[in-house]
Length: 361
Image 1 (tube, rainbow, N blue to C red):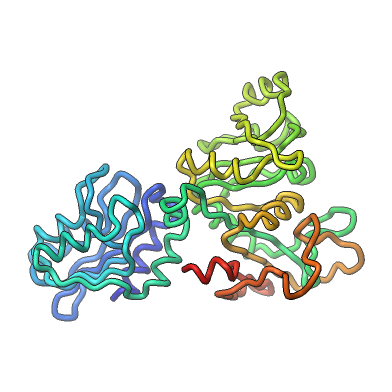
Image 2: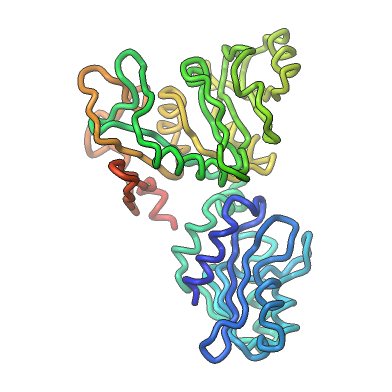
């Protein structure tokens, strides 16, 4: 039943920010009598939808919910109160809500009402479902996912810089879906100069993420396509430059210029992520630029890695995904854990997390 609740919750991924994606199932005598998921921020939560569908059958029923029911008034009333009013019998929770406004209070409210509760059911799966929400609500910073398309010999481009297209159509469609689930997508100025990307989801009905260009010296040309899109999502240029004339022209083109602290002559990514977090950005897809990826890697800012491998070999002096100095010894390399793989035709997606971060989960 919790797996069903997880499946329901996934329908809301990318649509509920700044709220978490949540699924709920109401079960009476082994039969599902109500289901629901959180569909959009500011609308009823998963428990409310499930209880409404269950009606009177919710009385004495078992409830499976992926995240602890909220116990505070936000844009909607507390879900814990709704469960108490419905007189459910037992509530099984995937994980306790790390939000300080909840953090066990929802479960305590249910227990005080005489409802049996149990938490930690499929906890790891429930945690993965809301990684951006959890990172943001506990640290104030967004969850950063690095996406890279590589050949089998680990190259993102040839020695001349040619990189179109390494992966196949199926892999690229998946990336567009991933973009639609993220709050922001980030690239370096070099990627804009080389590829002139749009950074949109390109899915029917899909949501475009905020576009963030890390451009320390404002090299971005005014004719760049991402400055002239019919998209409700903003384009943000993160810089350390004081070129007021260029800033005025970029803002006139519709971009927002975000001043950041400097680090080794470039935008301080830690400061940039802090500012994005303060704006409510919970998730960032880091897509382009060896310099940007290398800086994020060396400063330990990447929370999750997505490597798309195509069955191709560049050989020779092709470009690898991370600029800057690498590890001098194998025993000092960054090791990934919780590895998962997936096929997209002939392409293989390898997903992993920094091992040090995994030990804290």
